[in-house]
Image (cartoon, rainbow, N blue to C red; front, side):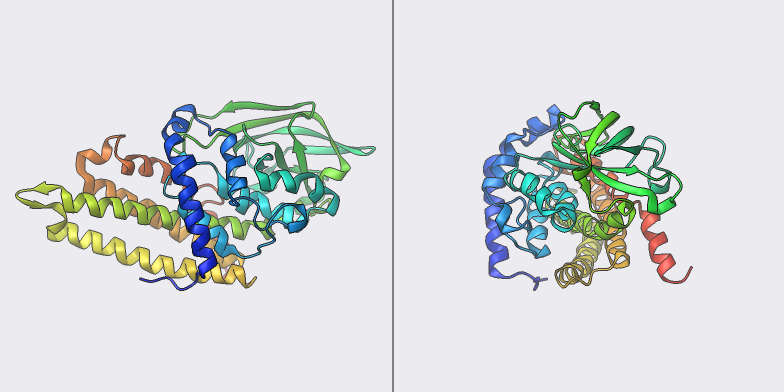
Amino acid sequence: MKRLIFEPEHEQLRETARTFIEREVAPHADQWELDGIVDREVFKKAGEAGLLGFSQPEEYGGAGIDDFRFNAVVIEEFARVGSRGPGMSLQNDVVGPYLTNLCTEEQKKRWVPGFATGEIIGAIAMTEPGCGSDLAGIKTSAVLDGDHWVLNGAKTFISSGINSDLVIVVTRTDPTAGHKGFTLLAVERGMAGFERGRNLKKLGQHAQDTAELNFTDVRVPVNNVIGEVGKGFYHLMHNLPSERLAIGVGAIATAKIALEETLAYAKDRKAFGQSIGSFQANKHKIAEMATELDVAQAYIDRSIVAAVDKELTAVDASKAKWYCTELAKRTIDTCLQLHGGYGYMAEYPISRMYKDVRIETIYGGTTEIMKDIIGKDLGF
């Protein structure tokens, strides 16, 4: 089904991204998987290609393009290498909005130029060892001491935790204020007391470094507060919809690539004298997947348009996130089954996709949390 949301300039970026991936990512992707981390230099090359920070203000090195369709194009193209590539969506769609919408002019001057060139890699640290989806359970805390916040605590499962230069840390600055007691602090590489733990071993997404972070009496200048003191929780709630939409975009793009791989395999692989795709049971499974992905793509495209028009709600983004990630998980599982024994072999892309997709129903807010958000909106 032809998609109607993109203009020629979006397709131009798609070609740029595809060429960049073929030249700078695909040849190194398998090695990055083995290393458990991507080479930082690829971020600088992505910056040179215009694939980073395009939504940031022009005066600070960005392109000043506030159009989520460009974000979607980059997400979809990087889905072709999946988790073996650099975390461009984390940079553009998760960290980027905090810099664009919440940073002061002084902070933008300090961070945005390097962010747009790929010299500064960003991360956001929410999850803690003792609490996952329950942000109210965060124990990392900071106490004001003159013109610094003294930060203590630990975070885990932090994407780009090893490579990151600028980490937005969700911390409790008022233990008596409930949701009004959180503040976002920008911790920079090299600050005394800021230590990185293990690059965590994971089921999938091996090239994406994921780390434990520890903060021991880290003195964070007051001018490193992102947004307003005490408004951290509200800042998170404002920015999470774009992150969740980005995850949904990537999930459908990955599932469509899995289906492409499976179609080619089902046409080529012979059993009992005919292609396995020609058996009615398999043909119907493939038809179901193609239909479901087209329907989901229509919802994603409508959500992208809503994001461009500043009309995307937290509820709509939650619907996109849970449905598309669950669909991707189910689709890729079926695709692996259609590959038979070969689907279990690491040399086949579907094997890696199967491992990589599993986390998508968990990070960015679990499926259960997404349904809870939707249920509350329905009056429950």
